[in-house]
Length: 190
Image 1 (spheres, rainbow, N blue to C red):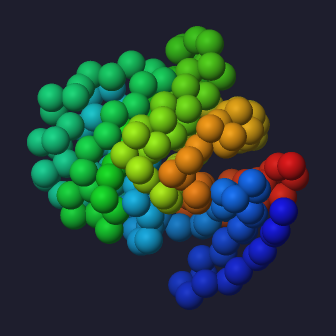
Image 2 (cartoon, one colour):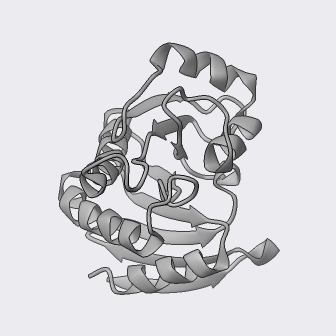
Image 3 (cartoon, rainbow, N blue to C red):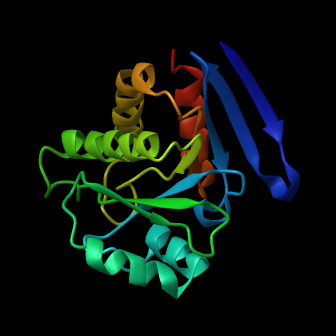
């Protein structure tokens, strides 16, 4: 196991940890500006339309072609994932996941785990090597951040032995406090 901290231009800070040949890291930045990743994950709404937060950033950066690609795939249900091209993003694919609304969509922990599980399955099917995730459902959908991170880590432990193509998983947040929580939890991951 290797842990590395790096300081990047523009103040982006990253924690990097390699486990069983898969790098798991976190970065403070914009999910729609993650160069060098085959896929980014959109914390989508059911109709896969532009919205606030992650969905707004991704759709704005990807351009109107993303809305057109998403239209025949919608609606999706909590826990589901679908894949499109990246359009104008620097990524080949966007994997769209609908996370649970905390306190409404139950069982919330299972539905959130399904988002990550299904996104990673799609990544494997499309031979994705590197993927950047937001922390799904922790914005407007109200999922408590620390609880969401625990669901993510449990799901990663389950999925990592089955990953053949995916070799890098990065979690992206714009918020200092959330970044620090991710950094701490990833440092204790194994």
